[in-house]
Length: 265
Length: 272
Image 1: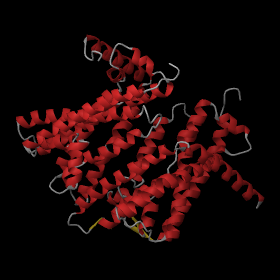
Image 2: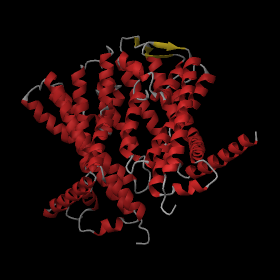
Image 3: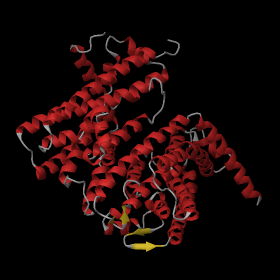
Image 4: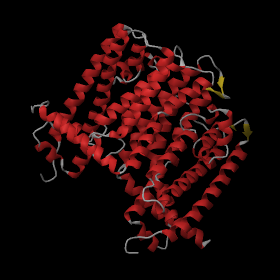
């Protein structure tokens, strides 16, 4: 197995970031508009939450600011994963469709890592900023349970990021076989929908699914519960399915590379 | 009469070719068979929890809102299109030039393409999702009035097309119209009622939305499906709602016709 992590990793990532930023700065207005639209498109669900609560209804057991906190953390996680892994699917799909994936395979770096490092996507920066503002607003009303809650939150937030990363990698892996299907992201977006709301409103079977099988509950719900002091400490074990999910996605991607057939290569 | 027959023949031919072309990518459409029900089931659980002990919220009961989201999803499969993106691409690449040489209005051609594309959508998206909603989820997807619902959905089909086509025509005037189109799509997403029924918005905003075109693509046909229409404390009959929708379609059609004639004069193609 190729060495994944060495000093060149940082150089490759730095080059990818610089190239990407240089690209977006060429059309600055378009980039700014794109960031604004990305942010507004992704905060539709907090709008739904506002409208629900202003109608006098609520999610049982959760007040408005607590639900907003879940959605704020979800948005930030979306933003971070969008920046780091957002380009992986399209990059992989593009290479497979054009038959240029061999060029990636020839490089002296793990192909998955190379594509992740070289597809920095700054468009999602607005999600991090917007999510942070929402989070600050929500926390100013709910407060933070304790210092230990912050530690729990950080751990679970990174676990949630690993789930997002895993989804991006699985989608990219699927594109080796399901070539050119631009609707792949919709499949995982629909499942991620479960993670935008308190998972306690779903039936037990659905809760188990989004906690242990495709752990989208970790994206927003569990970190928010931790910081609010509402998380049963035993449930910290839920990070294990997240790590397993990510490991499975990496294994799947490498397996799909073995199935890849180049075009006249 | 010959004119209508000719138009029908052209529409049929273009729609058939488009259907055949897109049926090569039917798995692309079939993604909706998974995505649609998953989105719907999330809405089902959320609203069941939200309603809790409430029998009604903003004039809608739990059963109403579940059926609303089911209808909204299914209607979306019939009415969706990307006429704006398509037209924008043709103009940017210069391929629109070939359409100016043909004895065929491109807008009519694009509408015929949409008929073919959505016919495929009806078969591989609408029907399977309807079966899932009705048989698997046990949702009553029978419209309150089938004739009015069919007319309203047909008008939403036209409305969505003409609005998107008008957006696409921005590319005749602006080099980069993607941003403007994206902003419009965002507003449409919020105010069409596909995310949440419009009755949940503040009363003053509902009254503004009553005069905006967004509701006619999703909210109006979904409410006609339910058998009742109200917005901003204005309650009207199904016939009046559909009549209002028809008037809006006529207005948008006239706007698109004017825009088309002015834009064609403005169009310059490479080598034209």
